[in-house]
Length: 566
Image (cartoon, rainbow, N blue to C red; front, side):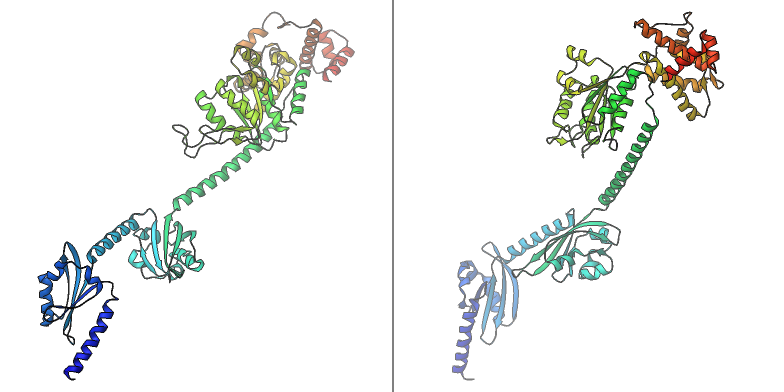
């Protein structure tokens, strides 16, 4: 080729190079053999003068021309900035190109730092991270993968999630679900190691909407699941026990008879059965031990609420600082020692049933206000709560004190008293219904005979002593003394000598008949006659013998016994 043709080719090539280097995103300077700049793109215009004056760069260009180094890469500090520089000798054109990539090292170090930060986050995250490409091939997994899936990171990388799913490493593959649905997926995953994971899979899409990455965050919920299973089992057991308790209480109610031969007591019980059909608040009044809880239970069991809870709370037995949380419940963290999940109160537990508030007079005045709100609004506010909870509860209250007097003394709220005293029921003490003493005693003897496998009975003298005794502890005292006599006495007959001192002192009094209270003479004579007839009936086997002992006609005895049995 002639020199003119060579010059033409070179000129054409150089013009093409000029056009080409303008497209590059970095600075390019092309040197001639005399170390003069032949070509430079526009980006090279931003290079500082120190670059062109740099002797080290010139020496490297010179070595390329001498073909000592045909191609060379190096990092050079120019004007305080690190530059990535590449030298290349174009032998046909006898030119050396110098490529200068601005701030390459800075960008590289920044990328490296960000990469390290990302890796630290990847490894220290509470969730185990799992990254796959758009084909489901595993790209990265954090170190927790060994504990969850039984595989190290290098054993997972490169494996396709479908193959891992078929091997049972995890089921289902959340990545597969994300790729199929092309959207975020949350699901429970089980692993070969027997763990349960809560996995959230998130798709990363390109500009065309194609999924190019799937990032999974997996959290081990095995212990949570086990705890939930245990809680569910506990709830099931509690429900079972609750049902058994309700059945036992129902059986007990059916078996325990409210025994009464007193006309006044019968009227009270009849009123209790009548008010059971409505939801009005009932206030039961009476001395300790007369059977207020039995009457409350009778009302519940004959009402439409009988299949729902009957919960009793003794307002005088629970310390004042605990009574509020027991009745109304509390929210989590309401006070020191409170359960973090909070607790339902007795009002909520008795929902759709009956709550029996015994010894209501012992309730502190501050809580009486909250009780009044429940009665008025039919809702409770838990301790520490801000949202009321609706309740459907029938309230039955009881007390052995005179609430009206407590109201006058300022010990009980008047508005609450009238709210509770909608239907008052007064239970007579046992001394005022003596005709119930022996029937109740016989009932308790039968119960304790079954319990202790005995066959004991009262002697006539003991029965007489029972009727003469005042029973300050009422039915409860009678029940306790009968049990004591069944357990402690010898033989099948409970003799007078087995009785406690407080009863024998009274019955051994020289007066055969005792009057313990002022009452109309006619009523007193009728009561004495009834007691005398019952004692005689127990002692003698025929009306003839009874008439002989009482020194009256047999026909009179027959008539009076018939009237007694009516």
